[in-house]
Length: 220
Image (tube, rainbow, N blue to C red; front, top):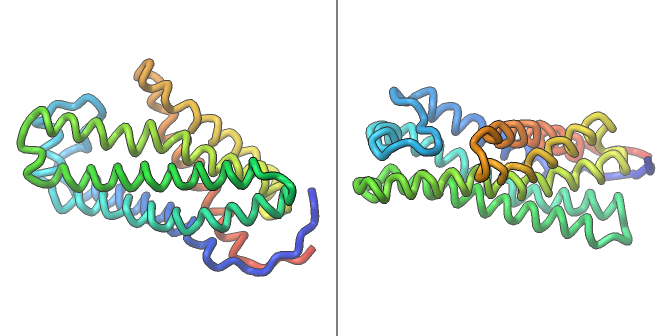
């Protein structure tokens, strides 16, 4: 592990905000609704029961995703700087963080916007409702998993090298990244659905911890 002196990166706290916004928004949306969140493959009636009959709760969830995406966009720069400190001559590690982060932001924002669209008249048609719901799930789950996994994996490789995160957190990050990269397996068989929440929430733990540590000064 290399020793690095680092000034506080207050903007890195956006990584913590991203996780809190996602968990709080989605959690509050589900908790305040009198209908269960429709699982992938749900029919149009179940989709509308949550998104139309409980539109305020659904919009709360969508807002949480959009705030999370915006905050994650700010956090990317902090992770890229981290990777450059860890491997000053490498272009691959910073590029991995940048590409993964950008794709993660885009997919999460797309999921939030699609969730918001489901609360409008666009979901009145059965075919449109189920199509939008599937699009929301694919964007926020299947597509977001590998993208977020690349960002978290970059943290896992870079953080322990600079001493910004402990080795145990680095191992958690790598495990989370692998799970995220494997989330498209859900498309092959639904039994792999557990990879989506497993990679998401372990990744949020890693980004939250990294955000807090990067926001503090560290002496070599």
